Length: 136
Image (cartoon, rainbow, N blue to C red; front, side):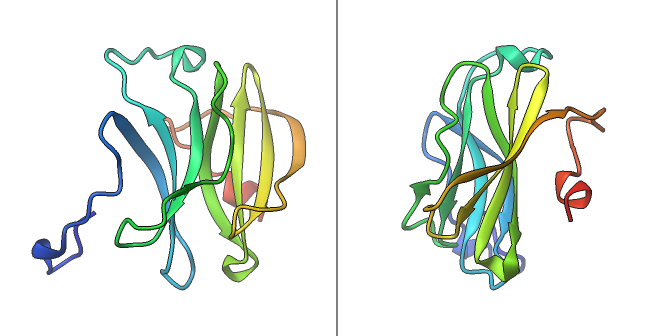
């Protein structure tokens, strides 16, 4: 992460051997949520062949990184996190096979619950879905 106008303040949030995507800043800017997966060579266009991913949360300086979701089983992608309730909760999408479910946890990572299940996966736009707009 490189702050605008402050390149000397560059912070690396992603550990070696992993990739982060779908960053979502908390409303107050005190946390960033990401979808994290192990790096792999030659990513397929087929989602079911992608490495599993989980939702992680960290402070802007990279400290205090912690895993929020446990989507680390084959074919399970936890992705697209977004903040709700003014930053008190975090929601994300879990993609498994041809279906999706929506999950929610407190900003502390506790009280994880499945909110919706067996949702059809919509057509994406270059790999991007607007789940937060669908469920707002």
